[in-house]
Length: 111
Length: 110
Image 1 (tube, each protein chain N blue to C red):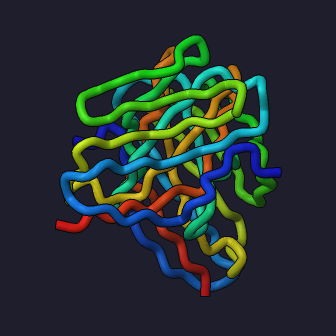
Image 2 (image 1 turned 30 degrees about the vertical axis):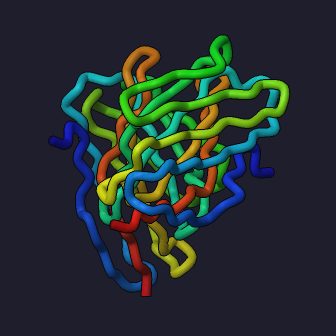
């Protein structure tokens, strides 16, 4: 049973639209992460947070932004979607030194 | 620069036989290694891990071996079952920095 939830699961949308991908976890984890993954490729970290009001960029440059106003919620926003943003976006969380726990992802297609 | 490499994109084995998935890394600062399993339309789920102070960790049918001098780790699944068919990601950590490989798709044939 998932303790970390991502919505929507799938999104097909036109170029130029503003998009927010939602991620919520019920485990009380301080650390949360966003990854981008293309088929057959490794997961690339695009954003992470170590707690409320803490956000950092990952090692893959991304035009998206994130916020962490509440511990359980870590939304990712694209102000103006482009076809190059088409990808799978995975959210994860972790507590202490435990392994990261992933959501089921959002598969985003920009037309 | 890809610091964690899984050079086999796919692997096919017969049910009941051993599956061996390999992973190489380049950064000697990595001190903790994990394997994740991913089914289609689901997120990766944690499978097994190993600290750099060990060379083997076993959990049921799954064993991870670490060879630090070769910067190589492997995941052994014995016996393999059709339900093991999935994509397996290797990951390596140094502090809070975690890097993933591109995954190996394992198919276990009945």
